[in-house]
Amino acid sequence: MAEGFVTRFAPSPTGFMHIGNLRTALYAYLLARANNGKFILRIEDTDQERLVEGAVDVIYDTLRVSGMKHDEGPDIGGPNGPYIQSQRKDIYMKYAKELVEKGYAYYCFCTKERLDSLHETGDIGAGYDRHCRNLSKEEVEKNLAEGIPFVIRQKMPLEGSTGYDDVVYGHIEIENSEMQDQILMKADGFPTYNFCHVIDDHLMGVTHVVRGCEYLTSTPKYVLLYDAFGWERPVYCHLPLIMGKNEDGTTSKLSKRHGSVSFQELVKNGYLPEAIINYMAFTGWCPKDTNEEFFTISELEKIFSLEGISKSPSVFDYDKLLWFNSNYIKKLDPDKFIEMAKPYYRDELKQYADNKKLAAMVQSRVSVFPEVNEKAEFLLGLPDYDTELFVNKKNKTTVELCRDILEYTIPVLEGVSDWTNDTLFADLKALAEEKGVKAGALMWAVRIGVSGLAVTPGGATELMDILGKEESLKRLKTSLERIK
Ligand code: GLU
Image (cartoon, rainbow, N blue to C red; front, top):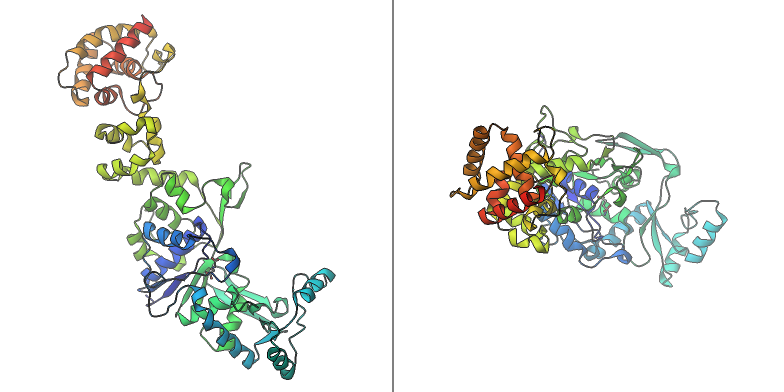
């Protein structure tokens, strides 16, 4: 096993953690852990116009809640800090100047007006015509001395091609003539992402760059920078897109119209971070030699490998996530379930949030926490229901049969002193036998009689156990009156 991989998660603070970014973080994290490595958090905020207040906290929260512990980062420090790019501003100019010295970059003094007019003529698309590429040393020095604003551009080779081997996509090769002389340092003194992430990755000792595939074809520009400095290139691992399923069956890049796309929103909607992480791990990766699907993050840390990453875009399957979530909810300790479900109860149902019997009944039956509401609905009282609910094919019940059942069952229930699910169940089963009716038929009559609902979160005796003797009998009598 290779040792000491250094990976990083380098989000831009947008105030929102898209699940695609979460997956990038997860794979980078797992790759480091699986290879006795280090996982670094770096905040990429050089685009000062797009800063969002509180956005960095969203990043910290996501990593903490999902169980990804970084080894270095702005909040915990480390030997390669600072870890926020805007605080590293002074580092980059020196490297840009080094490239100018070596002939791999140049000062560009073109004004905005000139650049705009270039684009208007349309000859070079959105590109730059390399006007300043061959300014003489004297001209450059004169301009600098006069304080003319400048940017520093990368001097792309004009011939040949540049390639690299991506772990997921294989060999990527781009004609040098197709690459723009991109800006490395902006006029405001800030570096561009294209430049500073390379410097940072090198200075922070990053060995494996894991990120979204939108950078796949710009990476040749970055490897040219490594080569120009004489630095060792990192291993690149670009991840395919996560797609969403459209109503017409086609797929497109996962976005809001497919459902919740941020980690925070999913958590708010009642998904457990453990379930999200487990599902995300499988969105684009699968383990070797096993069909097992349930893994905690610490188990994933042991088995994650680059070989299992798929090159084809994966479709985000909300049903599958729901299935994972229901399984994780089932496994929660009952008290933990109560505590976690509590905030999701509607106001009128809040009073039942601590009811252990209710919780025990619904825990195995909800897929996401907000569903506790529909499950607890029966507690609010007998609705004004249609008596046709008493008719059930499978149990061969009719309204008349249910009426008879309720007639003789109510007095029996009145005599029950140990009002628990087990006793009620045993007593009603014995009663059905004695009366010569199917237990299913008797239970049906009681369940409808006590709830007035076609679908209930539990059987007749479970519901009665939770409602208590007085309320159950009151409801059964009301129901009997309705069908008499
Ligand atoms: N700040 C970039 C982003 O959020 C990071 C890309 C990278 O990992 O290099 O897309």
